[in-house]
Amino acid sequence: MNKKELCEKAVKAMQNAYVPYSGFKVGAALVCSDGTVFTGCNIENASFTPTVCAERTAVFKAVSEGRRDFTMIAVCGGKDGKINGMFPPCGVCRQVLAEFCPPDFPVILVTGKNEFRELKLCELLPFSFNPGYMSG
View: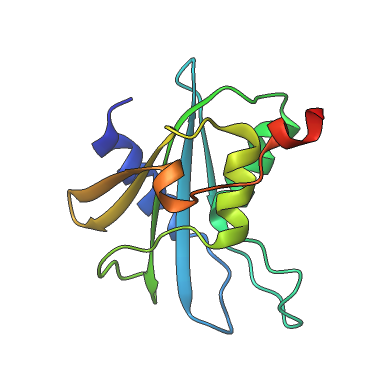
């Protein structure tokens, strides 16, 4: 799976978003070490707190299927599903990624048609609280 193909899967997943309140659609595509891809979209709720982001949807789908061997994720988003620049993961999604991914985990941010920017998770979430802190 190359990065362009992964970005295309994230864009496709974005179209399934349920966003009647904000209008901001987000899609994510998460790759496992064997090439399996789990996609996710954001799903809003009228009371807002139960809203789930695309990145967490993809991670939770993968983990619920017994997978924890992630190699990279692509994320895209925009008002009414129109990509207009980067749409990075929120803080909660960054923390969830830190639970399962190493600091150098690639996060691909779709910026436009056939355009993306690649960052490491540690650049998005420096000094993350990770499982290592729980081992005493």
